Amino acid sequence: MHASLKSITMRPPSRENACRLTLFLCICSSLGSLLIYIRSLELPLGLLSLDIAALGGVWVQYLLSRKSIKFEPQELADRLLQVQENERHRLSRELHDDIGQLLTAAKLQSEWLKRRMPEDLQGQCSLLCETLEETLAKVRDVSAILNPRQLASLGLEASLRAHLLKTLANTPVHWSLECQQRLTGIPEEMAVAAFRITQEAVTNILRHAEAKNLLVCLQRLPQGLKLQISDDGQGFAPAIDPGREGQRGMAGMTERIDQLGGTLTVISEPGKGTQIEALFPWAPRALERASPNKVMH
Image (cartoon, rainbow, N blue to C red; front, side, top):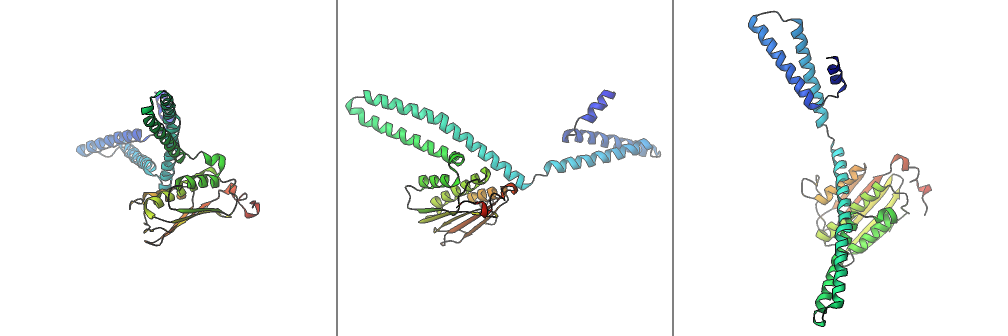
């Protein structure tokens, strides 16, 4: 008996256990009260204690339920973004390692067949090799977009420049990337957020804006890293709640900037272009390193 009581007290309360205990106490209390009422007896001390215990069980259940459903929107957004990034990295690895290797093997096999094909089939085999080469390049591009590995090795500025070069190469958009200071020592989570916001903005420009000019500006300020994206496209009416009104790209940007405690400002009107300004605040440990006096020009 002593061992069983000890195991119960050592076991942390859970919602299921609290529900069962509360239900048991309430049933016992109700049956005892009903019996006292039927027999017209005075309320004994034991039944009063049982009523108090049942009330305590209800209170514990309330506290556990309140704790279980208390899920802050910021915590949920952080978790969703973390899951999203992990899934992107997983898909990137599968594309690069599995599908990329299969396409490379198929390309080598097609080249081997081309050398042994009759003259009348050389053209078709060459077309097959070109198709496989183009597909392999597309897979590598998608893998790089899902997981920008160059952020760790090249840094934010070079990664953004490489992305803009590749994405806008065959488009009529004239773009410019301006960095007023060297962007060394940028925290990884901040660099990823800035890269993803720029990536989403460029995607929206290509899909909807029909812009001719694009300017991406990065500036290292004492209060944080400032990212500004401007275009001369068709513009739009920014929603107060982008997620509810179908502006998923803007909703993703807002979630990323909120995750780092920053601010996002969107200025746009139909026919007047769009300007997106994001400010990522420095973490306390990076404030001294981000001071303008410490930055190398």
